Image (cartoon, rainbow, N blue to C red; front, side, top):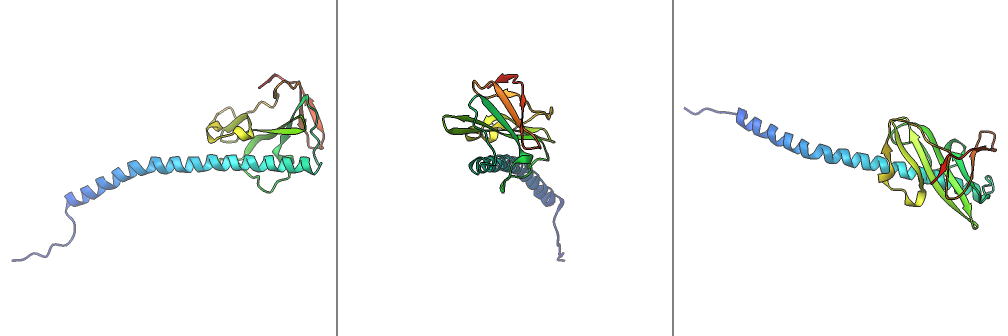
Length: 171
């Protein structure tokens, strides 16, 4: 007598399940790393977009930052930009483009933190890498740091004027 057996045995099903679990164990960390690196790269592109916006404002003379003894903090909400945007992790709590003027050239820095705690401490935009993005639960920034030997800090206010802050240190 011939039996017509269709289907899988329990051992065949277990073998397939084990293979799938092994593949998931290998794939999930890789995909997670890829997503995290994509977010960090996006974070840097957003920062560069805001810096480009400040460069355009300086070039068009909408923003005057020419004192050599001053570190200027420009909050992102006052920056006209096409390439800016939100943090890929959440909403910005604080974010600044920081500008210093020296010898007819400008140096640009970035510092930011979002509501998930992802932040970049004050760092030159040209030296910024994905490794500079840290996750810090404090969700606060220090916008009282001067750059180099500059002894004044100005922060752009909503009225379009700068207010002076006392520096607590320099980088």
